[in-house]
Image 1 (cartoon, rainbow, N blue to C red):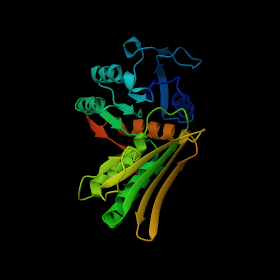
Image 2: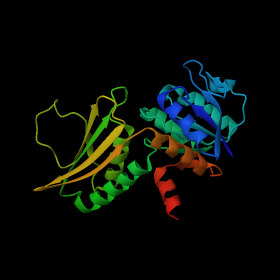
Image 3: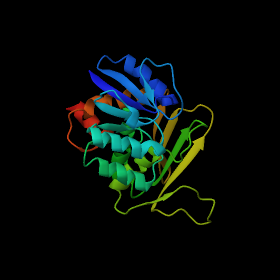
Image 4: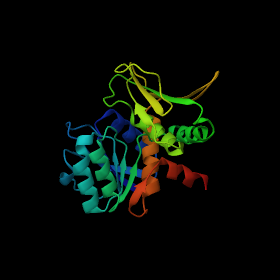
Length: 254
């Protein structure tokens, strides 16, 4: 049995993770951490990590970038692996995450869906074939409550594509500020916010007289919770270092 501390337990994703954990006989949430009040869970909830009394095997984080320092300090002090599912980090915070991985296992992904990570691999393969002759654009759609834009997933896709291009591309988020033709060395990234869209991502390869589109739609938040729990089970017993969904996918294929 894997005992989990859930950071951000009172948020929308926190509630989904709690329900998913109840359906998984291999894990148990021993406590939660959330700055926003108490709840009716059957486990204790704390405002800060230094208040925790329970022993655990791993931390799953679906919270806010403001919680990062407190969480990383706790994990390093207690030698706990951490599954970081929060997005919207600054570059400085990303460096802190990488630094923490020198001490503990850190599973870090902007999207915990196996399907999304599969389309990243497909987009990378498409880039090898089409990248030099096709323009590449990424369109992401999310609900009207999402704060950060573009999504962490869109940036993951763009970074994966960039790895396969000969020249480092420029990420272009907004074209209305200048008037010029699109350069070949661009990846356009566009964010749409509206309604209750869980998450949709289209990777568009636009060439001469033809367009190839790779798409993924998330129908519910449950798939992200399931991915986070699978990541927690995957990372237990691993040495300190950075881990991601691509490695977990490879492990499943063995």
